[in-house]
Image (cartoon, rainbow, N blue to C red):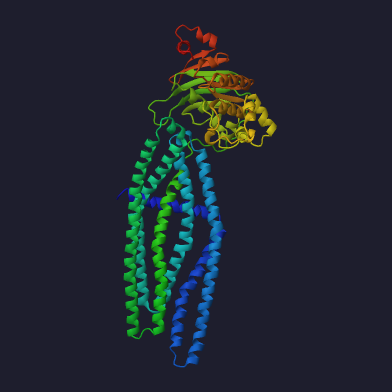
Length: 593
């Protein structure tokens, strides 16, 4: 069996199971909608019956008797029409809150899961593609609800009802309609799942890649401009568009041929039904009114059957468009709170690595093997070493952005794996090397560390971070929008906003990722001064690329290939004749670091 077929079947099962879970949350709306649309459709099923009776009544020779016989049929037809309109309106009124509610739930759940997926997952995913998966899946749910509840369900009701009613009068007619319906629906499903689906999966994949490419280039427009690479990015996008065009055209052409094939089956069914109706009339098994009933019924069935082809195509498209969202919903968190995890209570901020082994996925050997080190509460520690030596991984394990492979990371004696991630990170303030800000006001960016902080508290934190003066000079002060990722601010200004955020967090543990690298002298001096204030009374871990920034710290840990090869103060380490710290310090001093 081809590997594509199980994948398609699994996609249908996965998507429909996902949709039914959304419906369970609003079961009352779904039940009311199904009841309303079923009754509205049954009104369509019975309408041809009274149309046939009306024709037979008008065939009476006595006009007065004909009118008397025709009026009840006429009244029934009018009543059925009113019932159909009213019940259909009820059904469509119910689908609005159902669909809006489920779309909101899906978007909320997708955002919730993506926010909590692992650092590795985010590092390997385009943000633009992820946004596209969520938004496209959300809107596909709108079409899928309409297709299943307001389109396919009525079609099934009218087909079953018609087969029963005609079969009770003329079994042969019931058999013809039943077999024709099975042939048509089977053809439509086969074309949708075997012909259209594989092409649609590929075109949707290129659609996602197109969104990611656009987001990647637009989000890094400053780099594009810096290298005059607009033409290169245009060419890159053109290449993606060419493949997207080819795949999408193939999908759309398969849809076109599918519809043509379905119309051919409908033509054969119509010919068979009209032929059987004529035969019934010729054999006097049916009156002219019965023939009118059959033909009117066929026109109703034809409308629903014609729509079934489109509905199945729409269903297939919705399943394809939701497939990536459903896969995202099933994506494991990577790092998740354990059952029964409690909130972390920090009394001092002591950090201990106890025989920690850590292995990055995809790497042949572990980075750490039985690493043990203790950082007492309130100690200021610098982490130095060459790139890839394990400094950044050390602080990521403290934050539990990854789970250790073996051993334990403890804060004040509590294993970080036993507490909730939210409570752990609330106790850790971080100032990254390249702070990224939200496209929100400066006040909102600073207050991100403590939602609901007062304006006075925000300003105090900004003053401590030496950020108040430049903020006060801005036209809107703390209400100034900083642009996407903070692009309206200079590097030094962004760094001081990040420091203000850390001051406002007032966490007992502080992580500084060389917050003064690549800055002008004035900004460096202001930030260094703010950092000194920020580290007081906290357990501070400083990742140092420029060793001049760690000279005043209480302790320095020198990393090399995942091992701590030296541990001591600047004064002690600089006097080791063949020490790695001394060698690194001399190299930086020689180049004027």
